[in-house]
Image 1 (cartoon, rainbow, N blue to C red):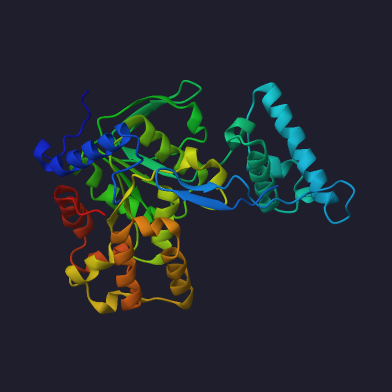
Image 2 (cartoon, rainbow, N blue to C red):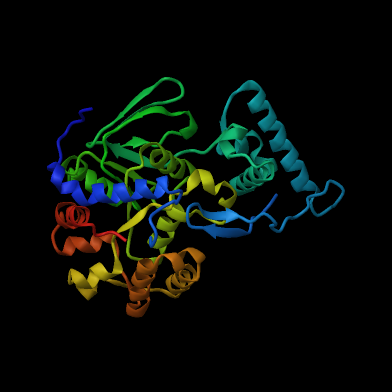
Amino acid sequence: MAFAPMGPEASFFAVVDQHRASLLAALRSGGGEPAGGGVRPASRFEDSVGLQMVSHCTTRKIRSDSPKSVKNFALILKILSMIYKLVQSNTYATKRDIYYTDSQLFGNQTVVDNIINDVSCMLKVPRRSLHILSTSKGLIAGNLRYIEEDGTKVHCTCATAVAVPSNIQGIWNLITDAKFLLIVEKDATFQRLLDDNFCSKMSPCIMVTGKGVPDLNTRLLVKKLWDALHVPIFSLVDADPHGIEIMCIYKYGSMSMSFEAHNLTVPAIRWLGLLPSDIKRLNIPKDTLIPLTKRDQMKLDSILKRPYVTCQPFWRKEMEIMADSKMKAEIQALTFLSSDYLSRVYLPNKLKFGGWI
């Protein structure tokens, strides 16, 4: 199948292709990735899935005859009633739609969000099975075509981005010849890569951004692309605790959504950049770096204590470099080397020579 535009010669992707072969071999052997690489659920970790809800987690009771919980009980019943009507009529609504049916009663959007998560966890079904959709904020670009549930044909391009669909379960007939998928943490970096024609120069490829902490639909899309295509997925995040946290959400999931880990996580994701070790290797000036705040240090300490870091020694080493230097760097620090260094030199070299961990 032919896509335009043409990228580098096939030999450029030799190491990426080898990486894909190792991922496929791991899948065939039953592993998730090559070795070395009203409920608030408690979680356990499994390297092929990510964070999952434990079978005997702590629960809380919400009673209709208790003054402390009667309002919450009523709100849950109201939302369950709305879910029942949605399922019966085979229609969908967003969480925002539900909030605005009676904004005074609910008080704020967070109340609705928490109840929907609790109901989904209690019934052990994905949120989309409740016919409740999230509003998408993510973007996608590159060599990809698909058809949405209503029959709309979407043709992503390397020049402009399209919004991540609101009903990921409904998209079908995914067509691509992409060699890899690049997750970009920030929208500003994503847009700069588009402006620099990175997607065209590295074609065939796909780029996705969740514009910071990813929404549910962006995570579902990355998972769907992995399940359908099994191409290498790389992450490009700032060399700071917040960027690492975002990468971990894509790769291993989050505590709040651990009950749906099988539908959301992609443990095969690799850290492409910006690595803390790259800062010294590339001689990035100290005056472009930012000191870690106390909050940063607490976040970094928290990540280092997580169970999945024990099976990622190279990640741990990078985080220890950051902790020792007490400095962080944004991807934009690379512009000191040249305005297009990220798209012209840094990423192409990483992809060509296997600079991921």
